[in-house]
Amino acid sequence: MAEIIDGKQLSKQIRHNVGERVAEIKESYGKVPHLVVVIVGDNPASLSYVKRKKRDSERAGMKSTIIHKEASISEEELLEIVRELNEDPDVHGLLVQLPLPSHMDSDKVIETIRKEKDVDGFHPLNIAAVHTGAKGILPATPKGVLSMLKGLDVDLVGKEAFVIGTSNIAGKPIGMLLLEEKCTVTYAHSKTRDLKPHARHADIIVSAAGVVNLVTADMVKEGCIVIDVGINRVEGKLVGDVDFEGVKEKASYITPVPGGVGPMTIASLLENTLECFEHLEGIE
Ligand code: NAD
Image (cartoon, rainbow, N blue to C red; front, top):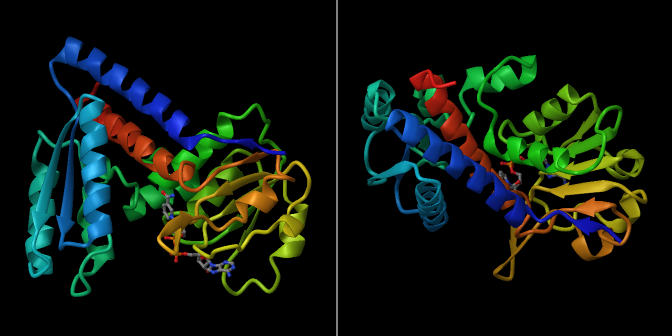
């Protein structure tokens, strides 16, 4: 029977640590990190994420601003807003909430964000840093997954890790971070012929596909660590990619959905904002 990794609790601890550091810096330097979130349009899920980011950053003692624009603004107008925020010395962390309206090129918008303020870690140079092992800003969800794994009393070196999903924001960087930890990493994607032989071999499974019931008990070996990044909505309820009830009987550790990876993503975002602030302000 698996131990459940409590993402809510871990994230609370991380947010508390960030808050303490922010208070310390405020005391010594009289400044706090400022996170700006730009949102375009009225996607209800995006609006609620953005509000949560503002709430949690303020709770950690940071300054936070939401810039909310109509879905009808042009791409150039949005790029101009980003360029101004890039130049603004009072802004330390900057993110543009995705998805953007279809008339905008998200890649172009993200590439325009100054990489030193890119708290989402989506800028191509920050993504490249994950792949080369160079110093950069880690994307929030992969960073949260790594924090969870490192928080376990488990040596990651030499572990067989199976990562399902290869997107640039989740699967691919998660696998690269595990590779940096000296895991042996196998990736799967929608064209992988059969997940089972890879999964059954794995010491760690991370599923980031967005497919309900993708990982079932028969695929998992006894004692495997299972991290569920997936967020799916089934009859109004949030569920992950993993058949939690079945898999928890065989895994050694497992993350629930909700209350697993999700809360860690925001905690990592706050850590990134603090890191950007310290870097930009030259604070050790
Ligand atoms: P995406 O659609 O960009 O990528 C999905 C990946 O899964 C692709 O590589 C695809 O090939 C693979 N895939 C799809 N079906 C598959 C199958 N049947 N077998 C194997 N691989 C399959 O999605 P994403 O943005 O990477 O997000 C993935 C999931 O993680 C979604 O459910 C998303 O909501 C969730 N997510 C959660 C958080 C969080 O904070 N918890 C953050 C980001 C993404």
